[in-house]
Length: 75
Image 1 (cartoon, helix red, strand yellow):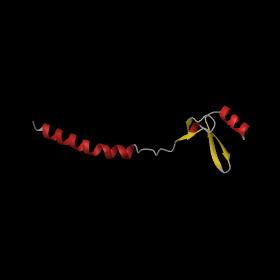
Image 2 (cartoon, one colour):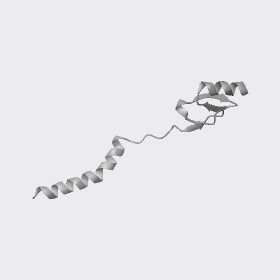
Image 3 (cartoon, one colour):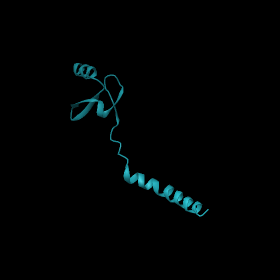
Image 4 (tube, one colour):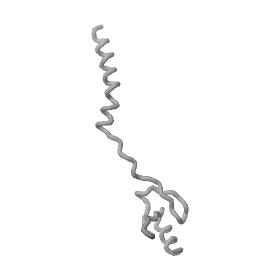
């Protein structure tokens, strides 16, 4: 029966320390990827997967090469 209190306190200590250990060992990465809107077909695409071109000093994002081609034909 001497083992039961030790086991109880060990579980309590681990339960209290585990969240801080997780944060140190596996820190959350900041979310840098966001959705951007395609001006041609009005769909949203993740910025890292979008095709981008600069227009008037601002980036314009497209979901596909087809939308980029259609945008270039309009302007």
